[in-house]
Amino acid sequence: MDRTMTYAVIAGSGSFLPERVVSNDALAAELAERGIETSDQWIVERTGIRQRHLAERGVTTSALATQAARHALEDAGVTAADVDLIIVATSTPDFVFPSTACLVQAEIGAKGAAAFDVQAVCSGFVYALTTADSFVRAGRSKCALVIGAEVFSRILDWNDRGTCVLFGDGAGAVVLKASDEPGIIAAQLNADGSQTHILCAAGNVAYGEVTGDPFLRMDGQAVFKQAVTVLDKSARKVCEDAGIALSDVDWLIPHQANVRILNFLARKLDMPLERVIVTVDTHANTSAASVPLALDAARRDGRVKAGHTVLLQGVGGGFTWGSVLAKM
Ligand code: UT7
Image (cartoon, rainbow, N blue to C red; front, side):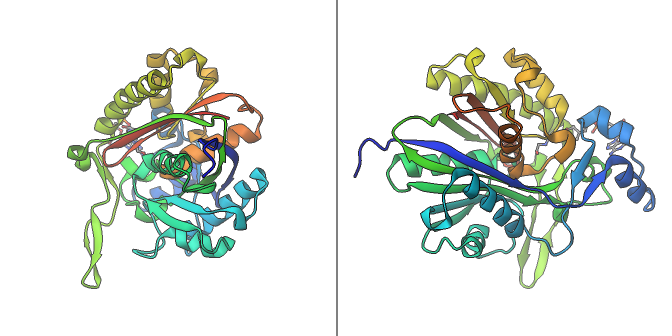
């Protein structure tokens, strides 16, 4: 084994959003037809969301993930044959099994690569990236594809205005390659399973039927408070572990749930808003896809550059949260 290959670097990124864009006004008009009252003003004031991409019926998580993966491979200058590990973070998999990662593996033609899903809801990408980083650092992978992909529109109760206006569909991906220089500098993951009830989709398929509640349910205010608290703590911890001052982080890329959460967090961390990547306005909350979508957008528009230090953060159902600090 080559002992110099100790780190994992993000060698490329890619994303994919369904074509159909639904503005707040269009969504409000659709909901009004069913007697549900909402408005662009409420959604923008409370969340910062202006539109979301929604997948057509029949478009699956694996289809979105495959497109994002192809873009990331191209960006990294590698082929599917180079990939030896695929991890998909999703809470809306195509099937109970096989994993969405196996479906992506077959689609892109990365035959033989290890493939599995990670289920940590909106923290999923940060969990998956940390897992892939561990594989690379242990010498078990040289080229990993890490994807966050969701069709959350499938698990929304479109009669619940408190949740259905908040989410969108999409996928983002990165290629992680072994390198003798960092790369991912530090990571930390946490969960508090006693908080399951504040954000869950507590249904299952059993005995040929859906049992329990098939829809996402959320205590918005409880999640909001928890999110700001844990993201603040986690950011400080991961920087402390890495021996890096928060002021040396070039870009904060947190899970995109609500622009108010991002503003609170930035204030707590004393991070100027110009250094926070925001995509929730155009993508809404895409759960596990939100962080790689935001990272890819900021790389492609030239804000995140080689040599920059980025702090990626996830938070969501479980309750789960975590941070990855990486040099690009
Ligand atoms: O991805 C996982 C992480 N998820 C999150 O981080 C979400 C965190 N939570 C939030 O972002 C916010 O709590 C929400 C955006 C979900 C809600 O914002 P809020 O400021 O906490 O509003 P609220 O739930 O306290 O509701 C305020 C009012 C209520 O009316 P009353 O009781 O004051 O008359 C709601 O019924 O707003 C009403 N409301 C709406 N009105 C128009 C709730 N949803 C809507 C809506 N349109 N879509």
